[in-house]
Image (cartoon, rainbow, N blue to C red; front, side, top):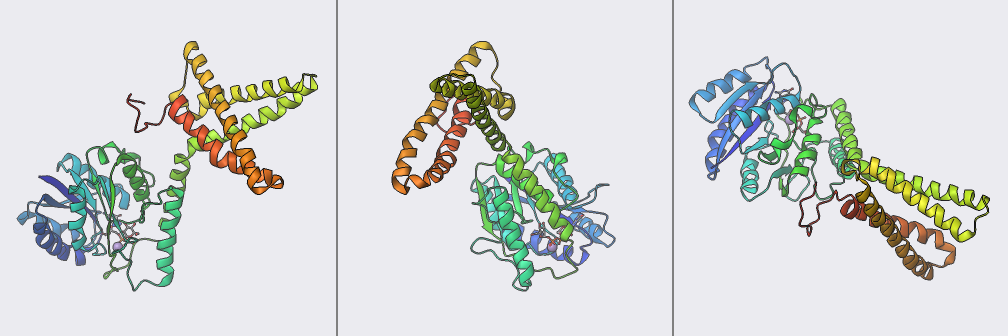
Length: 384
Ligand code: GDD
Ligand code: MN
């Protein structure tokens, strides 16, 4: 049977934790028949009786555990400590991140586990899909921050299909997903922002990501520990990840731009040397192509660098053919576009053709054919 461990950080939650064990462990767990459910509370040396209450409960329940998160303080570290323990000591097949303060009502655990049993590698408890919600009592301001903050992160990480990227309620499969993540190297583990990095990497490792509704409840006891500092660090992590994700594309664009400069410069140089116009264009274009090939090879695609004379020659020929393809695209769609919008808007046509056709075409050809960094569904050979 699949073993699912709920990791629940708890810091001074004595008012909640006893009832949580009642409702979650004693009430909800028995309803989940196809998985072996456990609760692992990660305490941060609470000043109240949080740990003691859980220890007491664990004596009569085999599926309740409590550990301390150690010297490293902060919510991210609590989860990292808990996840390592769940994998190594409790042999978890999947772990769930869940709050101790009933903001994640226990009734949502069942559907989450079901989604996992149905084949999901990552399950997101989402407040922004039908059936999910944020507390009605929240002031408009708080609702707006949560909604737009989320939207911002969705855009930055280009994850339009996922609706809640900051939720604290999630399930992660261990094999192939969580065990591939270097937990000690998460960004900002002392803050709430750890969860953006964890989500980003988990989604990357997972074939099937599923969102299940979460009705995020309001906190009854005490105040939330989330604040402006946490929010800024969350955005920061999202932006850094977003840029990293697009790094190759940014390098590709930079190289393309340098190629354009080389082309432009040598047009003048060769013309100055008195070369006939056709050769001027030919040589300067070829120099730009060489520039692009070399820079892309040692920089943009350095992980897939092409070396050796034979390989270099054949790949460089391929690269020239690819560039010729771009030429064909331009000379077909350029005149066609001009026919539609008029010659006074030729610049618009040029921008459109370059941005929407030539750039994607080049980027695809470089990744899929020349440097082969993309695994295409129809490719047979294993690629690295
Ligand atoms: N062990 C440990 N150590 N537990 C902690 C720590 C810590 O440093 N800080 C917070 N906790 C526990 C709390 O006791 C609670 O069970 C849970 O972590 C969440 O803390 P809250 O302070 O209640 O967070 P929140 O309600 O403001 O934030 C919720 O919403 C965020 C935004 O949607 C959480 O679900 C976050 O995960 C979520 O990002
Ligand atoms: Mn809370």
